[in-house]
Length: 456
Image (cartoon, rainbow, N blue to C red; front, side, top):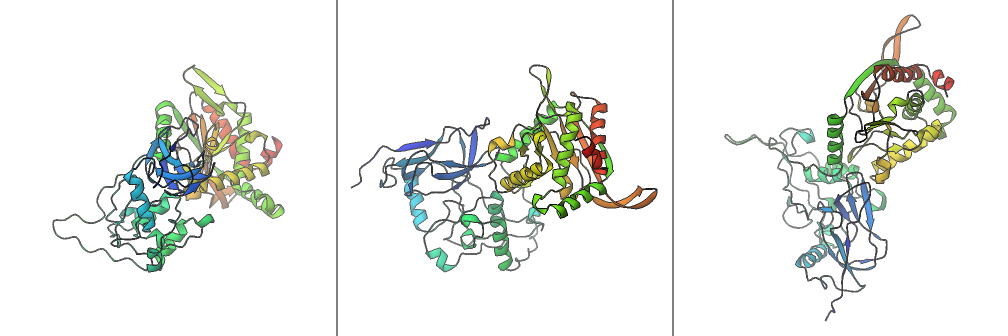
C-alpha cells in the first residue's frame, strides 16, 4: 500500500526579458524518474531562444503537466514532484500520468518526440498539441504533389526494447522526419549526448531508398499536395513577426545603396588568414569593424527614438547586432560594447555567438539591447535587399554577395570582387546627408581598407 504524500508543483518560471509564455520542446525526464535539485528537466522555446529549465527540488516525478508542443504561460504548472520513492500518480491519481507511464514502458517513444514505435505503420501520436499528419510532402519538400511514403518502421529489436526515447531538440528535424515518414526511434544519433541531428534523419531517408512516385489523381478528386497547411505563429516566428510589423508601422524608413569594389577587403582578409590563421578573421568581422568605426563618425545612426518622451536617444555604446540563420529561423545576436573590441576580439565574439545560435543555446539577454545591425545576406547568394530595421534601432547595413564582375580599375575594365551595400535608416533620426556619409565611409573602407587604419 502506497502512502500519499504532498506533491510539490514547479511552475513555469519567469524567463526574463518580458517573456510571458514558452513552448515545451523536449522533456529530459519521465514520470517515475528521480530528479535532483537544479537538474534540467525540460527544454522550452521562448520568443527569444531555446532554454533549459532546472527543477528547484528533488524527488520522484509524479506528473508532467504539458506534453511536447504545448504552450504554457508563466506561472502555469510544469512538473509535479513527490518525495523520493513515491509511486507515480500517488498524489493526484491523474489517469494521464498512469497512461504516460504505460506508454513509456511499452516503448511507444511518443513521450518526448511525438512518434509512436508501435502500432500500424504510418500512425503518429503527439502529446500536448494535436496536429494531423500531412498527407503529402508538398512543395516544401521540393516535389509538388509527391505523396508521403508510409512510415519506415523501427527494427524489431528497437520496437521490442523499452528504454529512453531518442533526443530530438530541433523542431526542424522533427518536421523533416514527419514529412518523410521516418521513425525517429530507428535513427542512429551522432550529436552530442545522443541528440539526433538533421544529417542523421537525412541519412535515414537516403538509406531507405527512393520514395514511391505519386499516382495520378482520380477524376473529380483534388490532386495531392494542394491542400492548405496551417502553421501556428508562435515562438521565435511570432516574435520576429511582431517586431517586423512594429518596425514597419512605427519607423519611416528609407534605403540608400552603393556598389563597391571589395577586392581590397578580400585581399586583406586573405592576408590575415595566412599571417594569423589562429585569429580566424573573416569578412563579417572586418565589416563589423568598419561599421563600428563608421558609427563613431556618424553617431546619428547609433540611435533609437523614444516616442513616449519625444526624444532621440544617441547611444554611448555600440552594441552590434548581426543576423544569423539557424534551424529555428533568423535570430540577431548582439555583440555588446563592440566599440571597445579589436578586430580579433570581434571575430572571436561573432564566432562564439554564432555557435550558440546554431545550437539553440543563446540566452535571452544575448538577443536584446542592440543599437545597430549588420546583415550579411550575401551568404544566400543574393546581391541586394531593402532590409527592415530591427526595432527599436535606427539603422541596418545590408551586404550582398561578393561576386566577380567587370569593373573599371586603373583605367581598364577588369574582373573585380563587387558587392552591393544597402543602408536602411530611420528618417526621424537623420537626413540623407548623414546616412549617405556613413554609407560612403563604409564603402571607402571596403574598397580601400587603409582608410580604416587611418581613422582608427
